[in-house]
Length: 493
Image 1 (cartoon, helix red, strand yellow):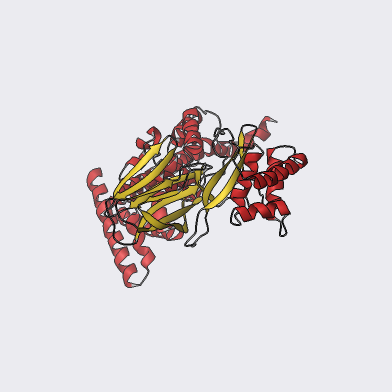
Image 2 (cartoon, one colour):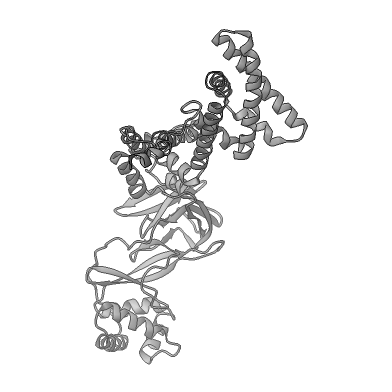
């Protein structure tokens, strides 16, 4: 039992398999497009590639580079796609497409801070930056509050003279002006480059966040609003001050993104993750089988649930059925036919079969010949039932073919023998018991949660086996026996 529960928890927690049916993940498809105009001579385009971080996971990626030499260069934790060509005559577009989803919101990975190198500035500009840095340092308590104050100063509609001067020195761009201010204040900073995901957006460009180092931790700030942290829809593309796109031998380069979101089942997304399918617990599992065989096991794995229910009703309730596990097969047929259609179809076929079987009993046939004759009768009944219902336009009755022929035949034979030996009352009791168990099993195995757990967590069968072995040790009274002997209690008093 513990092995089954343990393996199930491992798949759910470690591998991320959903415990509940109907869980979906929002998968983003991003198409990045690099356009540039070539010059004379060889061309080399280098594009920084994103990594799985901050809870984002890359499921798949493709590169389009017809006519170009292509390679992915890795340097430590960073990757770059490099397209190259000796010559190019016309404006060209290169594509990089990837699928990502955010499993959960996580902090960025730890990253060491580089020593701050004070910038070498003209005298007047140095005085302005020093004055502003000293003022903000006086008003702040740490690097984070310094960053908030600085961002607020640059975001003012009517900035101070110092801020206005710095903005004019940086072509009205606040982020490089703030980086210069932080460098003078000896506060380590770096940029986070990423994409704000919005469904259906096109021509989206890279956005920059400002990371400020504080006590061994990088704190991301929105340089426009001063908001701390990453937005839920912000896909981290690159960390650090390196360039995102380099084009050698070309000009007028541009990087744009188009994106669209899709909702996919959580299990499908999980199996798309690189390396997950090769995990030992999945590589030697039902998922490794062909899809057709997986479909077969989807039904077979429901049988132990029915067997467990039979054990409960037999051992603790004392419910009698015509055949121990025949109700399970009837319940599986109900899944194909739907409950009401399956019930009345089963009753009609068995009733007619019993009537014909009563005639066969007068022929004094051997057992094998009699059962074979019943099989033939059942097949003829099912064929006639299908044809008549089809002619009458009752399409649902055609599902009678989902009932197992041999089981129906043995049910008719068993009930007929039971009728001859113990009478019609016992046939009614066992027949009713069989249908009660079949309906209860149908209601249980047709539950979406049960179906989801049995197929995606077959390890639970080990736990179910353990429970059945424990229940098999029970030797006390059944509920039916307690009810039957209820009058003895009064006599004892």
